[in-house]
Each structure stands twice: as structure tokens, then as C-alpha cells.
Image (cartoon, rainbow, N blue to C red; front, side, top):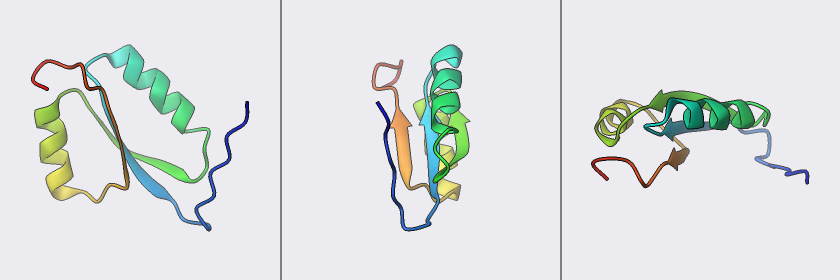
Length: 70
């Protein structure tokens, strides 16, 4: 299955939040295959993501909802 993203030439800044290093790495590898997406950061906790988001403009957030503290 092929997924096409059309952003009218726009790049989307993405943040990946996952407490599993392996899951985050796999997701980042998948997302890097989509030219319109830029990985702005990877965080291991909701608290770390909160700090990151306070200082960064993010268009897409990929969030593990089964993390400690969620």
C-alpha cells in the first residue's frame, strides 16, 4: 500500500513521543521516507515533550498514549 501526502510543497514538522526507544526509532524510520515530513524531535516522556513544545513549532505529533504519566 502506498500513501501519498500532498502538502502543496510544504514540510510538516513532526514530534515523536514514545517511552520505547525501539518503537520511536521504527516510527522515525518510517516517517523519514515521506519527503514532506521533517522530524523536529523525539521525546521519551510527556514532560519532555511539554518542554519541547513550549519552544518549538510542531505541525504533527505522534504520541504513545500508553506511557507512564499519561
